[in-house]
Image (cartoon, rainbow, N blue to C red):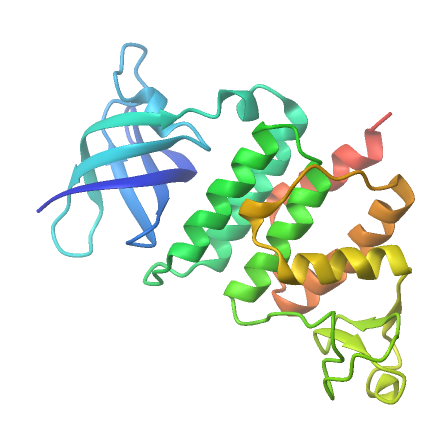
Amino acid sequence: MLHRLEGIVIRSMDYGEGNKIITICTETHGKVAILVRGARKIKSRHAALTQLFTYGQYTFYRQGDGLGTLNQGEILESHFSLRNDLYLAAYASYVCELLDRSLHDEEVGSFWFTQLKAALEALASGKDQQIVMHLFEVKILQASGYAPSFEACVSCGSIEESYHVSPRLGGRLCPRCRHHDHGAMVVSPQVLKLLILFEKIDMRRLGNTSVKDTTKTELKAVMNAFMEVQLGLKLKSRNFLDQLDKYEI
């Protein structure tokens, strides 16, 4: 059966002699794997369609739930700028790998696609890369069924002021519930404000933000703890980002 879908390339791998297999995230069919014959050849007319972060329309033949074979395609947004900058490529790769590892093959939902598309557009438009990444992480937690609660106590629902957050329990703890996790992290008012914002806001509504480096360092530690405890994913792109941070001047 012939299919025509819009999607974003979140994974691209070599296959056989001159071919590639790409995985695209779609709004209506979840993740879809497509074989692109001859994509690695110099004169291939489909090579550009297999580049990471590319948003395009893909027409392919697929029988049942097996691997599709590309017939033709059209690039809607190449996101060349994301591949042409080391840091942008690193953050965009993390966003794509995180979604790829979190979204099951049979899982369908427009939320995944819209948040990914918005995250790549935010990175391409020059918005703070780390803020984009952490907001996307919260959206992934929400979509995966691990929605954190930062505005209200995750245990009792109280909105009483408190700056203790528990990655293990999935959110903020009020003074009366703090004993549920003696290892809860203490965060600054600035970080808590950002976490509450991330909980509420859609990626498509993210504006330009100015956050102090010290706040971003603290925010990174908190979000790393949440992602490790709640999802437990070991991502190559995350390790690469950590290496970049070490050598950043």
